[in-house]
Image 1 (cartoon, each protein chain N blue to C red):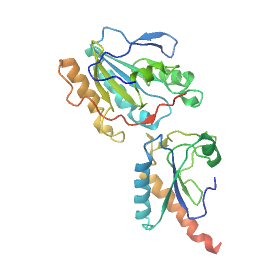
Image 2: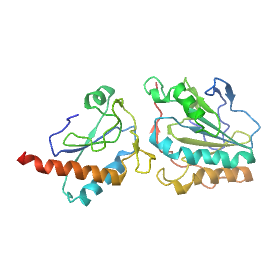
Image 3: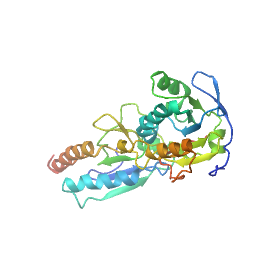
Image 4: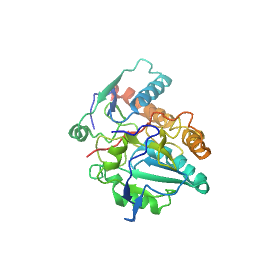
Length: 119
Length: 173
């Protein structure tokens, strides 16, 4: 991974999948709820299979916080230009992260990063 | 190319997951054709709702054919073996067909998965679009598809015959 500096929030997406606007909205909502209303979300379009492989992009949308995926895909998940499958807390497939799971994962990541300057 | 409302659709015969040729032509009162696949979260999220429609309308003479047209080389989750595994697991309420050449998807103008087409007994297109208004809301119960089928079976025009199909793009070769 490692697509951005610590603290950088990125939303990687592929135009062939329509889920990124919803993901953008829900990511912003989660950040606001965590007290990061001013956080910038960098939208990064992935356009080729080669780029997907280089970025470790397993499908659209993919969120990165400081280069880390808050809801990492299973080990060995292939990269590619596709819609990514997320799973809700209830075990249902979804084209976007479960908002509750995303918020909890972001809270863990952002909390960890807040301690890094003293590390 | 695409099919317009009221037009007789392009005929096809495709193999199911056992390699048995399945023709579109039949004596069904109505036929639902759904372009779908294994790897798309939209198709998966709507899948149970769509197949519930098939089960609920089987006694009314409705036939449902589900087709995967995706490039299975680039998307191995859509390979015939993976399709067959889902059929064996009982996930489909009708044949799951493989459009290996993608000719059917191109002839029908299918764009995404799922993309739903409802045909009358004369194989004229009566509805094309999404199963319902929101892939996330299971309570919608594939309402647009159900309304279209109810109209076709009653010999009435479909009130909202075209909606925007929403899902993953078909993976062309």
